[in-house]
Each structure stands twice: as C-alpha cells, then as structure tokens.
Image (cartoon, rainbow, N blue to C red; front, side):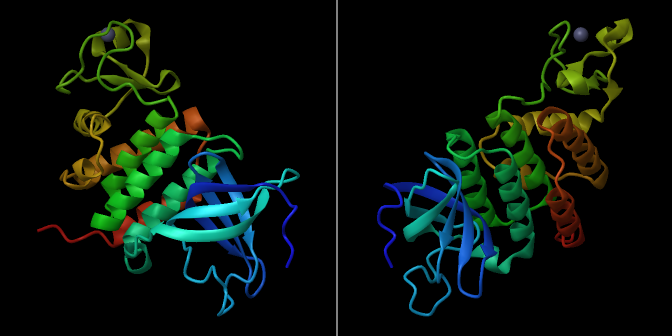
Length: 266
Ligand SMILES: [Zn+2]
C-alpha cells in the first residue's frame, strides 16, 4: 500500500475522543492532540488480526500518534500509534465511562482542527487520569465544567460582587447570579437594580472552593446533598449554554447514569 506522497509525517500526543466504524475492519478515530488541535485519522484494517494498530488505541487512551497530514481535508492517515496511557477503568466502570464520554464530547465540540488548545488538552489528560484512578461521581462533572470554563477564559465569577467588589464568601449574604454577566452581585447591589436570580449559597460555596482546586479529588470527596447537586446542575448547565452555546445530550446521559448508580451513602 503506497500512502507516501500524501503529506508530511507528523508526530503528536493524542487523546482518543471518538472511534467510529467505517467498515468491518476500518475505523475513523477522532483525536484531541497537543500541538495540532482536533483531528481525525482513518485507520484502514485496524481490526484485522495482523494489523499493527490492533490494541494500540481505544476510547480515552492517550497515544503517541504518527500520521500523514493531508492538506485537502481534516481526515489524515494514521501511520503508527502506540498507547502512552490506557486507562483500563473505562472498560469496566460504566460511571467513569459515562463521565468521560461527556467530557470527550464537550472537548470535540469546543475545539477546531489545526488550532492547538494546550490548556484543554492538559485538562482532558488530568481529568481522564483522575477518573481512571478513582472513578466518577456527579460532583466530578461539575468540577470538570468549572475547569473547562476556566480553560476557555469564561469562568463564573463566584467570589466577589461584580458591581461593588464586596467579598461574597462565606456565603451568607444571599447573592444573586446574573447569567448574562457570568457572576454574582451582592444583595445590596441587586436591590439597586443589579438584577440576577437567587442561587443556593451553600452550592455556590462548594463551586467556589472547587474553582481553586487543581484536582478532581476535591469534588469527589465533598459530601453534597441532592438539592445542592441539583442547584449546580442548573447553574452550570445554563452557564455553559449562555457562554459557550453548549448543551449536550451526553451531559444529561452522564448525569442520569451517575445518579442511578451512585454509591449508597453510608
Ligand atoms: Zn455589590
């Protein structure tokens, strides 16, 4: 098979976002790469018993990928691929896999071909590693969403009043959330026409704490009530829609799975 001449060979670290069958044996793989942004590669004969690609890639793996870059479209030809991190938990833990599916879907929607987004790549690496090590809870989804918004420069402002700058935590001051402005105003400014809608202050305090944490563990270890989780789901869901135009079915599926199969409280 002569695939030389189809473009230069490039090498990159790449996270598998999606694997789609093209035939019985060939696969289209969508990757988030460190240096080349989102890209797709065709892997011909990937599932044949003697294929060099067999077992070398799967959903949510990070791989070293060599590919022939084609200029005409964004579907490149994979030349070699070797797993760097396999994250086997995603093959056996449906909670973790449901969360990772949503995160991969969000990353795919929010990235472009040929546009590196190293902060987003690093976030996905971190969150996949942590899910693979310790599993997923509903609160992990909201931690990821906070970090996703931060990586894209539109994080919710949860610490101080947008109008007067007054500190709003500890959250006893009944702040209002102004969705269009992406943050909170204090009760005094809200009364003076700052607008907004009331949000449960205990849920806000948890989110504000997770914003300052670089690890998913902070969210996984927080004991949240059903009411607090519901407040986070609504606030962040509306925020993602308002500021990133992101409303994904995979989010609803992940949250449904994580609620049905949540570990029983002691
Ligand atoms: Zn204020």
